[in-house]
Image 1 (cartoon, helix red, strand yellow):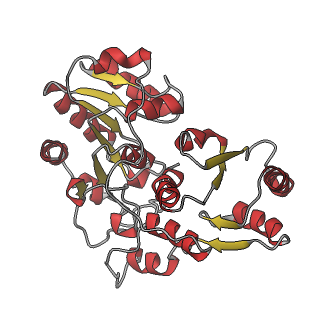
Image 2: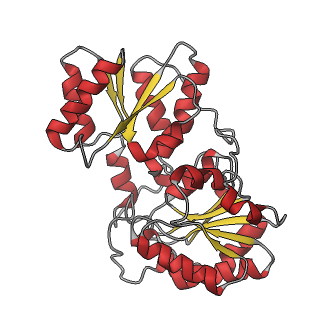
Image 3: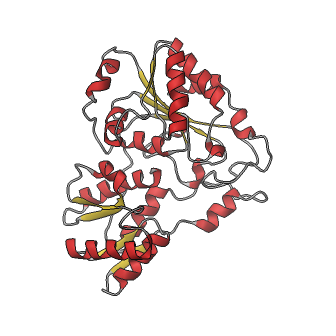
Length: 327
Protein backbone atom coordinates (compact mmCIF):
# COMPACT_ATOMS: atom_id res chain seq x y z
CA UNK A 1 0.00 0.00 0.00
CA UNK A 2 2.80 2.40 0.88
CA UNK A 3 4.47 1.98 -2.52
CA UNK A 4 1.20 2.79 -4.29
CA UNK A 5 0.55 5.81 -2.05
CA UNK A 6 3.98 7.13 -3.04
CA UNK A 7 2.90 7.23 -6.68
CA UNK A 8 0.12 9.75 -5.96
CA UNK A 9 2.25 12.92 -5.60
CA UNK A 10 4.29 11.93 -8.65
CA UNK A 11 1.18 11.43 -10.78
CA UNK A 12 -0.31 14.71 -9.56
CA UNK A 13 2.87 16.59 -10.43
CA UNK A 14 2.93 15.03 -13.89
CA UNK A 15 -0.69 15.92 -14.63
CA UNK A 16 -0.28 19.48 -13.34
CA UNK A 17 2.81 20.05 -15.49
CA UNK A 18 1.57 18.20 -18.59
CA UNK A 19 -2.06 19.21 -19.36
CA UNK A 20 -2.10 17.04 -22.50
CA UNK A 21 -1.39 13.84 -20.56
CA UNK A 22 -3.90 11.33 -19.23
CA UNK A 23 -2.87 8.48 -16.95
CA UNK A 24 -4.56 5.17 -16.23
CA UNK A 25 -3.44 3.60 -12.96
CA UNK A 26 -3.72 -0.18 -12.76
CA UNK A 27 -3.56 -1.46 -9.20
CA UNK A 28 -5.31 -3.49 -6.52
CA UNK A 29 -8.99 -2.55 -6.48
CA UNK A 30 -8.83 -1.80 -2.76
CA UNK A 31 -6.56 1.18 -3.42
CA UNK A 32 -8.90 3.08 -5.73
CA UNK A 33 -9.73 5.77 -3.12
CA UNK A 34 -6.14 7.02 -3.34
CA UNK A 35 -6.77 8.21 -6.90
CA UNK A 36 -10.26 9.65 -6.55
CA UNK A 37 -10.77 13.25 -7.63
CA UNK A 38 -7.53 13.43 -9.60
CA UNK A 39 -8.40 14.99 -12.93
CA UNK A 40 -7.28 13.06 -16.04
CA UNK A 41 -6.28 10.13 -13.84
CA UNK A 42 -8.31 6.98 -14.42
CA UNK A 43 -8.20 3.90 -12.24
CA UNK A 44 -8.55 0.37 -13.55
CA UNK A 45 -9.01 -2.10 -10.69
CA UNK A 46 -7.05 -5.34 -10.63
CA UNK A 47 -8.62 -8.26 -8.77
CA UNK A 48 -5.50 -10.31 -8.26
CA UNK A 49 -7.16 -12.99 -6.13
CA UNK A 50 -10.13 -13.41 -8.47
CA UNK A 51 -10.52 -12.84 -12.21
CA UNK A 52 -7.00 -11.45 -12.66
CA UNK A 53 -5.20 -14.26 -10.83
CA UNK A 54 -2.34 -16.09 -12.55
CA UNK A 55 -1.16 -15.86 -16.15
CA UNK A 56 -4.66 -16.26 -17.59
CA UNK A 57 -5.92 -13.55 -15.25
CA UNK A 58 -3.20 -11.10 -16.27
CA UNK A 59 -4.06 -11.77 -19.90
CA UNK A 60 -7.68 -11.00 -19.08
CA UNK A 61 -6.53 -7.75 -17.44
CA UNK A 62 -4.55 -6.91 -20.57
CA UNK A 63 -7.61 -7.45 -22.77
CA UNK A 64 -9.74 -5.23 -20.53
CA UNK A 65 -7.19 -2.44 -20.64
CA UNK A 66 -6.73 -2.73 -24.39
CA UNK A 67 -10.48 -2.58 -25.00
CA UNK A 68 -11.18 0.32 -22.65
CA UNK A 69 -8.22 2.63 -23.31
CA UNK A 70 -5.98 4.06 -25.98
CA UNK A 71 -2.43 4.17 -24.67
CA UNK A 72 0.71 5.65 -26.16
CA UNK A 73 3.10 4.25 -23.54
CA UNK A 74 3.36 1.90 -20.56
CA UNK A 75 5.13 2.91 -17.31
CA UNK A 76 5.95 0.01 -14.98
CA UNK A 77 6.41 1.49 -11.51
CA UNK A 78 6.42 -1.86 -9.73
CA UNK A 79 8.67 -4.22 -11.71
CA UNK A 80 7.32 -7.50 -10.38
CA UNK A 81 6.32 -10.70 -12.16
CA UNK A 82 2.73 -9.58 -12.80
CA UNK A 83 3.66 -6.19 -14.23
CA UNK A 84 6.39 -7.78 -16.36
CA UNK A 85 3.89 -10.26 -17.76
CA UNK A 86 1.47 -7.44 -18.54
CA UNK A 87 4.26 -5.63 -20.39
CA UNK A 88 4.94 -8.72 -22.48
CA UNK A 89 1.33 -8.77 -23.64
CA UNK A 90 1.44 -5.06 -24.47
CA UNK A 91 4.79 -5.40 -26.24
CA UNK A 92 3.14 -7.11 -29.21
CA UNK A 93 1.32 -3.86 -29.96
CA UNK A 94 4.49 -1.77 -30.15
CA UNK A 95 4.00 0.52 -27.14
CA UNK A 96 6.81 2.59 -25.71
CA UNK A 97 7.70 1.14 -22.32
CA UNK A 98 9.82 1.99 -19.31
CA UNK A 99 10.44 0.20 -16.03
CA UNK A 100 11.54 1.49 -12.66
CA UNK A 101 15.18 1.17 -11.70
CA UNK A 102 14.90 0.08 -8.07
CA UNK A 103 18.57 0.68 -7.39
CA UNK A 104 19.13 -2.81 -6.08
CA UNK A 105 22.93 -2.58 -6.22
CA UNK A 106 23.23 0.59 -4.15
CA UNK A 107 20.56 -0.63 -1.71
CA UNK A 108 22.55 -3.81 -1.21
CA UNK A 109 25.64 -1.70 -0.51
CA UNK A 110 23.66 0.37 2.00
CA UNK A 111 22.32 -2.64 3.92
CA UNK A 112 25.21 -5.13 3.87
CA UNK A 113 26.94 -6.07 7.13
CA UNK A 114 30.46 -5.09 6.14
CA UNK A 115 31.73 -1.99 4.34
CA UNK A 116 28.38 -0.26 4.09
CA UNK A 117 28.17 2.68 1.73
CA UNK A 118 26.13 4.83 4.07
CA UNK A 119 24.70 7.61 1.96
CA UNK A 120 21.22 8.82 0.98
CA UNK A 121 19.95 7.13 -2.18
CA UNK A 122 17.57 8.42 -4.82
CA UNK A 123 14.07 8.69 -3.37
CA UNK A 124 11.37 6.31 -4.56
CA UNK A 125 9.31 9.32 -5.64
CA UNK A 126 12.16 10.39 -7.91
CA UNK A 127 12.57 6.84 -9.23
CA UNK A 128 8.90 6.85 -10.21
CA UNK A 129 9.28 10.22 -11.94
CA UNK A 130 12.26 8.92 -13.91
CA UNK A 131 10.13 6.12 -15.40
CA UNK A 132 7.82 8.74 -16.92
CA UNK A 133 10.78 10.75 -18.22
CA UNK A 134 11.96 7.65 -20.06
CA UNK A 135 8.69 7.60 -22.03
CA UNK A 136 8.96 11.27 -22.92
CA UNK A 137 6.98 12.97 -20.13
CA UNK A 138 8.83 15.76 -18.39
CA UNK A 139 8.28 16.35 -14.68
CA UNK A 140 9.98 18.24 -11.89
CA UNK A 141 8.85 17.02 -8.49
CA UNK A 142 7.70 19.94 -6.35
CA UNK A 143 7.98 18.44 -2.91
CA UNK A 144 6.20 21.26 -1.14
CA UNK A 145 3.58 19.63 1.06
CA UNK A 146 0.08 18.24 0.72
CA UNK A 147 -1.09 16.88 -2.63
CA UNK A 148 -4.61 16.12 -1.35
CA UNK A 149 -6.95 18.30 0.69
CA UNK A 150 -8.91 17.57 3.84
CA UNK A 151 -11.96 15.37 3.39
CA UNK A 152 -15.28 15.29 5.20
CA UNK A 153 -14.98 13.60 8.60
CA UNK A 154 -17.18 10.48 8.84
CA UNK A 155 -20.21 11.18 11.02
CA UNK A 156 -19.41 8.30 13.38
CA UNK A 157 -16.27 10.07 14.61
CA UNK A 158 -17.15 13.75 14.28
CA UNK A 159 -17.64 14.07 18.06
CA UNK A 160 -13.97 13.17 18.60
CA UNK A 161 -12.86 16.05 16.38
CA UNK A 162 -15.31 18.46 18.00
CA UNK A 163 -13.44 18.55 21.33
CA UNK A 164 -10.85 21.08 20.12
CA UNK A 165 -8.01 18.92 21.42
CA UNK A 166 -4.93 18.05 19.38
CA UNK A 167 -5.70 14.88 17.41
CA UNK A 168 -2.77 12.48 17.16
CA UNK A 169 -2.94 9.37 15.01
CA UNK A 170 -0.81 6.40 16.03
CA UNK A 171 -0.12 3.43 13.76
CA UNK A 172 1.95 0.97 15.83
CA UNK A 173 2.16 -1.85 13.30
CA UNK A 174 4.16 -2.58 10.15
CA UNK A 175 4.24 -5.38 7.64
CA UNK A 176 7.42 -6.82 9.15
CA UNK A 177 8.19 -7.19 12.84
CA UNK A 178 11.72 -5.79 12.49
CA UNK A 179 10.20 -2.41 11.58
CA UNK A 180 7.92 -2.30 14.65
CA UNK A 181 8.57 -0.40 17.84
CA UNK A 182 7.96 -2.79 20.79
CA UNK A 183 4.27 -2.71 21.62
CA UNK A 184 4.71 -2.29 25.36
CA UNK A 185 6.83 0.82 24.70
CA UNK A 186 4.36 2.17 22.17
CA UNK A 187 1.58 1.72 24.70
CA UNK A 188 3.64 3.83 27.10
CA UNK A 189 3.83 6.54 24.41
CA UNK A 190 0.06 6.40 24.03
CA UNK A 191 -0.42 6.71 27.79
CA UNK A 192 1.91 9.72 28.09
CA UNK A 193 0.25 11.56 25.20
CA UNK A 194 -3.25 10.84 26.49
CA UNK A 195 -2.38 12.17 29.95
CA UNK A 196 -1.27 15.44 28.34
CA UNK A 197 -4.81 16.12 27.11
CA UNK A 198 -4.39 14.94 23.52
CA UNK A 199 -6.95 12.85 21.70
CA UNK A 200 -5.43 9.65 20.30
CA UNK A 201 -6.71 7.73 17.27
CA UNK A 202 -5.29 4.24 16.79
CA UNK A 203 -4.85 2.83 13.28
CA UNK A 204 -4.15 -0.84 12.56
CA UNK A 205 -4.69 -3.65 10.10
CA UNK A 206 -5.65 -7.28 10.70
CA UNK A 207 -7.92 -8.76 13.35
CA UNK A 208 -5.12 -9.49 15.84
CA UNK A 209 -3.89 -5.90 15.56
CA UNK A 210 -7.41 -4.55 15.91
CA UNK A 211 -7.98 -6.56 19.09
CA UNK A 212 -4.82 -5.11 20.66
CA UNK A 213 -5.81 -1.55 19.78
CA UNK A 214 -9.34 -2.10 21.02
CA UNK A 215 -7.91 -3.17 24.38
CA UNK A 216 -5.72 -0.04 24.57
CA UNK A 217 -8.73 2.16 23.85
CA UNK A 218 -10.71 0.48 26.61
CA UNK A 219 -7.90 0.88 29.15
CA UNK A 220 -6.74 4.45 28.44
CA UNK A 221 -8.93 7.56 28.60
CA UNK A 222 -8.80 9.78 25.54
CA UNK A 223 -7.83 6.92 23.23
CA UNK A 224 -10.07 5.85 20.34
CA UNK A 225 -9.65 2.80 18.15
CA UNK A 226 -10.23 3.44 14.43
CA UNK A 227 -9.03 0.03 13.20
CA UNK A 228 -11.71 -2.25 11.83
CA UNK A 229 -14.48 0.34 12.12
CA UNK A 230 -14.20 2.27 8.87
CA UNK A 231 -13.69 1.66 5.16
CA UNK A 232 -10.35 2.55 3.61
CA UNK A 233 -11.91 5.65 2.06
CA UNK A 234 -13.22 6.74 5.46
CA UNK A 235 -9.85 6.12 7.12
CA UNK A 236 -8.23 8.39 4.54
CA UNK A 237 -10.77 11.09 5.39
CA UNK A 238 -9.98 10.72 9.10
CA UNK A 239 -6.22 10.86 8.49
CA UNK A 240 -6.65 14.01 6.39
CA UNK A 241 -8.02 15.83 9.47
CA UNK A 242 -5.58 14.80 12.21
CA UNK A 243 -2.84 17.09 13.49
CA UNK A 244 -0.01 14.56 13.65
CA UNK A 245 0.70 10.93 12.80
CA UNK A 246 3.09 8.62 14.66
CA UNK A 247 4.07 5.74 12.43
CA UNK A 248 6.67 3.16 11.66
CA UNK A 249 8.32 3.01 8.23
CA UNK A 250 4.93 1.87 6.94
CA UNK A 251 1.94 2.71 4.76
CA UNK A 252 0.36 5.08 7.29
CA UNK A 253 3.38 7.37 7.03
CA UNK A 254 2.76 7.68 3.30
CA UNK A 255 -1.00 8.07 3.64
CA UNK A 256 -0.63 10.91 6.14
CA UNK A 257 2.01 12.54 3.93
CA UNK A 258 -0.47 12.89 1.07
CA UNK A 259 -2.51 15.28 3.22
CA UNK A 260 0.43 17.28 4.52
CA UNK A 261 0.06 15.78 8.01
CA UNK A 262 3.39 15.90 9.89
CA UNK A 263 4.64 12.39 10.68
CA UNK A 264 6.91 11.44 13.55
CA UNK A 265 8.30 8.27 12.03
CA UNK A 266 10.17 5.56 13.92
CA UNK A 267 12.84 3.62 12.01
CA UNK A 268 14.54 0.41 13.13
CA UNK A 269 15.91 -2.20 10.76
CA UNK A 270 15.27 0.10 7.80
CA UNK A 271 16.57 3.60 7.11
CA UNK A 272 15.15 6.58 5.25
CA UNK A 273 18.43 6.70 3.27
CA UNK A 274 16.99 3.86 1.15
CA UNK A 275 14.55 6.37 -0.33
CA UNK A 276 11.27 5.60 1.40
CA UNK A 277 10.67 8.66 3.55
CA UNK A 278 7.20 10.19 3.32
CA UNK A 279 6.39 12.90 0.79
CA UNK A 280 7.53 16.32 2.08
CA UNK A 281 8.30 14.91 5.54
CA UNK A 282 11.06 16.63 7.48
CA UNK A 283 14.15 14.78 8.61
CA UNK A 284 13.88 16.41 12.03
CA UNK A 285 10.76 14.34 12.75
CA UNK A 286 12.52 11.01 12.28
CA UNK A 287 13.21 8.94 15.42
CA UNK A 288 16.06 6.46 15.10
CA UNK A 289 19.08 5.02 16.87
CA UNK A 290 22.51 5.49 15.32
CA UNK A 291 23.93 1.96 15.15
CA UNK A 292 26.67 0.46 13.00
CA UNK A 293 24.32 -2.32 11.86
CA UNK A 294 21.58 -0.05 10.53
CA UNK A 295 20.07 -0.47 8.08
CA UNK A 296 20.22 -4.26 7.88
CA UNK A 297 17.57 -4.57 5.17
CA UNK A 298 15.69 -2.43 2.67
CA UNK A 299 12.18 -3.51 3.66
CA UNK A 300 12.65 -4.88 7.19
CA UNK A 301 11.94 -8.44 6.06
CA UNK A 302 15.16 -9.94 7.44
CA UNK A 303 15.59 -11.06 11.05
CA UNK A 304 17.93 -9.06 13.27
CA UNK A 305 21.32 -10.76 12.91
CA UNK A 306 22.39 -9.39 16.32
CA UNK A 307 19.34 -11.03 17.86
CA UNK A 308 18.50 -8.15 20.19
CA UNK A 309 16.58 -5.68 17.98
CA UNK A 310 18.64 -2.95 19.62
CA UNK A 311 17.72 -0.40 16.94
CA UNK A 312 14.23 -0.22 18.46
CA UNK A 313 14.93 -1.01 22.11
CA UNK A 314 17.41 1.87 22.41
CA UNK A 315 14.59 4.30 21.57
CA UNK A 316 12.68 5.24 24.72
CA UNK A 317 9.04 6.38 24.87
CA UNK A 318 10.31 9.70 26.24
CA UNK A 319 12.41 10.24 23.11
CA UNK A 320 9.33 9.85 20.95
CA UNK A 321 7.15 12.09 23.14
CA UNK A 322 9.87 14.79 23.12
CA UNK A 323 10.09 14.57 19.33
CA UNK A 324 6.31 15.01 19.10
CA UNK A 325 6.40 18.10 21.31
CA UNK A 326 9.12 19.61 19.12
CA UNK A 327 7.56 18.71 15.78
